[in-house]
Amino acid sequence: MVKIKEAIVVEGRYDKNTLSQIVDAPILETAGFGIFKDKQQLALLRKVAEKRGLIVFTDSDGAGFVIRSHIKSAIPGKYLKHAYIPDIPGKEKRKAAPGKEGKLGVEGMTPEVILTALRNAGATLEGEDASAPRGITKQDLMELGLSGGSNAGEKRKALQKKLNLPEHMSANAMLQALNLLYTLEELTEIVKSLEKQNG
Image (cartoon, rainbow, N blue to C red; front, top):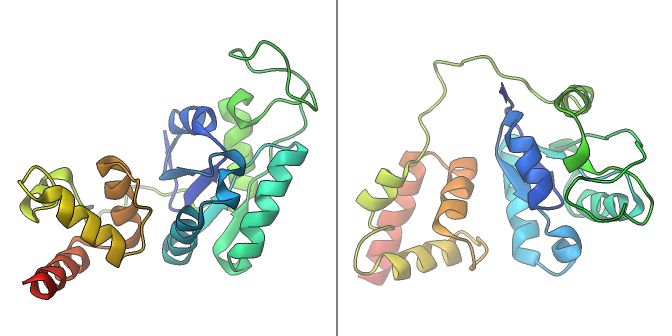
């Protein structure tokens, strides 16, 4: 497992599954062309890119390039890195027939090809950094009243609204987003200020 500092954005869950077996990095999805309609997801990608950098890793077919261009036009280039897979003819195991252009997507690549693409994109491969701040955990969310309590759902919604996070995020997706964007100290301050506002 290779640890990567930047977050990675892929088209869909099968790509995410493939990558998550090879790299230890936050992996976000565009839901294919869903990213064109989902302004909140795009805003989240922008925030994550500004905070820790974002590697765009889409398929090498036409659709992949359309999605990549859309992200490029929405997020300043200084926060983005681009990973490209080679054109390899074939089809993924789960599919009955090859895609329209007959090329393998990210999900069909070998670990070696994926790591080479990430290295070529300039991904920051991390050693164990003892000084890295500890992440926000599910336990922290419970202690802050965002999980497990009687009005945890309402508190979470208020927090999502304040932070402009997509409203349909699961608790796990929200935890990932919070870890990408805030330290535990910052989150604690935000939750305290929300509590004051709502009395």
